[in-house]
Image (cartoon, helix red, strand yellow):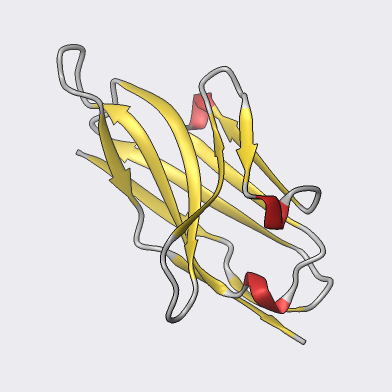
Length: 121
């Protein structure tokens, strides 16, 4: 299995910045796409950003120009730099990866436990 541990969440004022980290560990053969999702109270979980092994990135329109996703393959870690934060960015942020645990194992999706981001107005 692959374990994901997120960190970096917290309380910040509107306009501030936070940097989330997602460290993967466990039985890892290869990690493919890494992604950040978020879920606000009463809303469905939504994709915020993802990054492929080739470092192609994709963002939800609401965060374009403010958030930047990156990855360090040597550390099996993904990052989400969040700038110009808004109250509507308040949510639990989850890391997710597609990975294989062995050469002939299937490609599977793994989730972290989430980290709370709260933006005050």
